[in-house]
Length: 179
Image 1 (cartoon, rainbow, N blue to C red):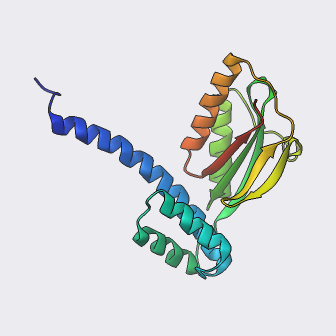
Image 2: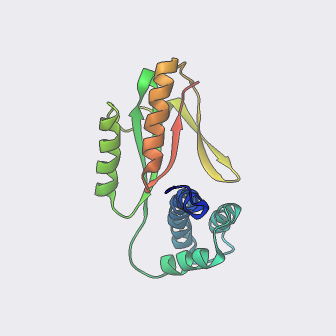
């Protein structure tokens, strides 16, 4: 009876969890890299310290954290934080925060994901007005000022869109004003 081997089942489950960890780790490495560049490698800087704590919460190995800090301290690639705005199903405002080394690639990826789901980027400032920036222990978050009621059908479309966006390695956070 092929396919009923216990190791085969464990191997498939492990592959799924490893893929999820890898995606989280790659996002955190980018985040640590940006904070390390801003702090010029000073581990005691508040931003870098918060990034390291965030990485430790998801059990990221210390070696990976140290490599990210060391690599970011060297001159070379610049990481940019870019915020995109879009309107989703039912007129829901969406703020997409990215961290990238290639602005053009990321912009095209975001546009492609939005167009696959039947949406497009909005103009600068067209969505941000309905959110407020709040400082928390984990960093700055966008909190909706004007929540929009969403039907069940639109909610399913929104969940699919947000999941597709979060699959992208460059996307750090996605905020919506859906109720």
